[in-house]
Image (cartoon, rainbow, N blue to C red; front, side):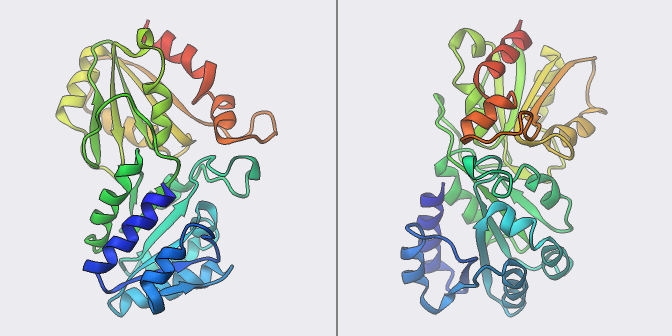
Length: 300
């Protein structure tokens, strides 16, 4: 998604001259064209993310729309106090962009992973979190973000490749119809379910949730959960305060029956070892053979 993000940011500058792009000293072989297009509006803030966010807040206060870009944990966890105090409490339109959400940086390990970001960002006052599913979602999400007067966080990862036609970017999207159970996922990890063998997924209805917080669940989706009495969620994110907990709390007053509810999420580092993103997904049961077995058992 990094390439799609850079292309979209360049295009947006034509219609939004008040955009400013800030990076925490990264973007080699990715942001050079952004730097050239933005000129004096491109700022390398160095390895000083707290300062970068505070400067971004100041620019937003003066009428600019700043993007603050870095690896996900560096631009969310490290400057968290500044995001909360300088940006969110003043409800300023700073756009925080984190690349490599979840296990995206693979073998680089826990310092470069972020399986807490959706949780910590969505609880901040005035913050909206955007989680693209496919590469084409990125430009559409950015179109929303630059017209959103509130703080935003954009979580980038490797775009999902799905065997189905995907609707334009929105908070809720139905990816596939089915009548044996419902799957709700956030982010590209949803492709691990969508690309399972046909005999496993044929009966599943699959939905993507891409914007947090959410205050409503589509009536059609609630009806399908009530009729199938089965719900499986998948997220490349820790369980605490993640998508499935937010979803469960909203569903409590809307369910007509007892349902089977199976949440699949990142549990950290069960073996204490590191590998690439797919390896971590498999180890945590959100990819690989473990996921296939869980989904097959869920359908049956």
